[in-house]
Image 1 (cartoon, rainbow, N blue to C red):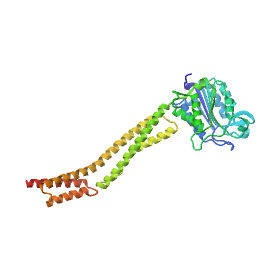
Image 2: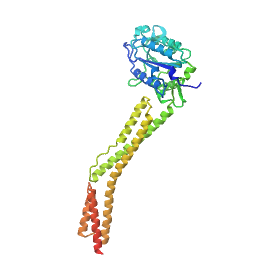
Image 3: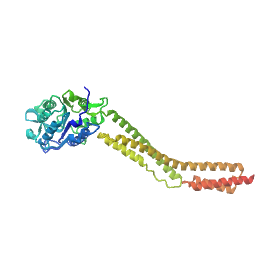
Length: 415
């Protein structure tokens, strides 16, 4: 079956996340806040699922299950093509039954059955929906020791709890919260977002739910993380959540790497220019201040912004930014070239005057006037000016021309 993207107008998404809990037994999950913002951005982006913003509801830190029930039921009623539900937070068991609940901000571990959202209620919303495709994504951590005592496999329990014919469930499964300190997102959602934003090499044009599950399993295996679980097959598994931008992103990163190398080369050229400036400042009379190449500063800033953008997968406008950085690099090269030509020209002018002085001195030797007191004095003045640091090029040029004129006059007088 060929994959396809959801019909945006006929699809709905409900994104639920709980990062803060009033019960001290439930640790906070700071990464969940960013999960909600970032996943909503992908689902509503033209590069992602393409849902209108009004069709993507974000429920942040609901205090009680009632704050989720009505938006969930409304989305289930309205969705005709695809219903997607995402939850990030703690999953909790209740008593000794293999029944799981999704913790709300106000959930108490001793009253889970009345203060959390039953997975069965999510299942019922899926059953009631007429959507052709129903997808549940759970970045759900199982808090507390009780679950270890009551369930042989939290993953199996969770998947079985919500399993509905025609639906697809993708779940992160860990006995404890996996939200690395300091990271923007929780681990499972971070990998999911990266795949949706940056693509998966060799995965085809569309990122289907099946493809995402296989990729996440591979990534988690490589990092020794908790393996995700899935349930459901058929049409829902072939539904795509984004186009595969892997080739495009690879090209953008390659261009970024090329420009970074260009910036390094231009920086080296700028350092060489500054070294030349110091040499000229030492040897030639004048005030030669350090040259600030604004264009290379701008290019560097754009490339640093690229890195920050790439970290969160915001690729819109990146192509234009790279083109601007490329233009800034070209401008910087041209500016360095202009300054280099000016500074090197001063040293070359001094060398030229020294060469001319030698030519005229040779002429004086051939005509036998080199020992003439006035000629020797003119030579000494020119030579002193040319070999004094710093050299006054204007005075030195006048002295060399005066020496030339004197030698020629003496030569003509001897004929």
